[in-house]
Image 1: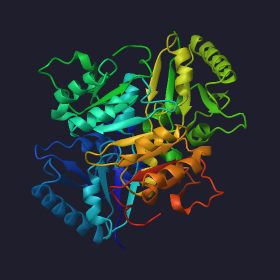
Image 2: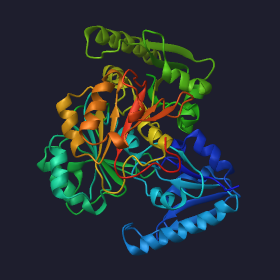
Image 3: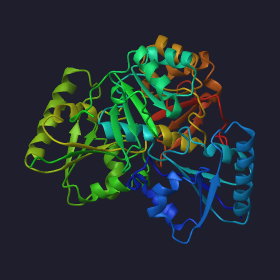
Image 4: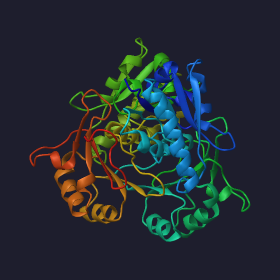
Length: 237
Length: 237
């Protein structure tokens, strides 16, 4: 019998924000795979580690950052082949995904290579989007308002157009695009309401109004929430 | 000491999709409040009930459906006053929210009335958005694509415009707007990829391509996911 590949959302950072289902499956999973950078960082593993079966075999999947390049494709091919060998031997694999597996997750590149050969099960998780909103104590969007999720690498023109008429927006994948995104948020009238949340829900969480960043400063592992419709409750970040 | 109001995301439907943090807090909460319709339905309570402190006092909050009308406002005023009485007496209250508390949640109407008088803590939850994607085994959006969350009660013109250039969209609050939304999805070229997910992750879950609905049929507690960028993995719903 072919093993099942479980994509497991481990949530945004706080190990207590795993679901009961994720914790149950990880407590018995014989093989735990997880994305690792070439610098040996593995955030999903760090989040899940209090809940892992201590005897689980660990299978780091090291992928170069740019998924559209040939080295990344070859790395995904190799990783999928290694996972399929275990699945074909009848072992289930739990693959750890930061946040939710299907909300802009990179797990799809592996699953695309595996899905026609082995059963796939998906355990949704708390996304960084809703965790960031909880951290700043403000709705993401409400009533009958449009919410736009905008990856920062999009061209200026697209971001400008989408932001111009958006009551609520979340900018993801900010990284090295921070300066450009900040300029566009100022231009489209969002800067006054934009809040930057780094490492939402984790011990490294940091909340700052967009305007608080110095010009030589950039946030890490961050999401920017823009919402004109509501002030944060209680404290102002 | 004033008690704390905890807004607790109980996830999309499966009681195992509560977070460990939500389950821990609910296991000891002295007072559990939850939205209930005038027909005495209380979905958030149903989801959370396996995890509740059996001795918890239950506090149903009955609100008429249309939140912008005077009867709803008066109901929120009464509910907030009742909750504040308990908070002022030093009791913590856990308020149960379907999905995530801040993703289009109605908890904001209560919190707006309470936040200047008592501490608020928010536990994010798995939203119906990501749970629905897990059910149909397809990314919500990926790479550098814009995702739009569109409440169905928006005017035709707004929906048409937002859908026209959207690679990925999720239609929420479908309810009685289903026929209108279906027509707009056909018009904007999304109908072939649109999947209707009812009661995602719960025992009543039902997955159907948009085209499978007869003209006199309407889905309940549903979300419609539209994504041109990826086919579902494995089985086709």
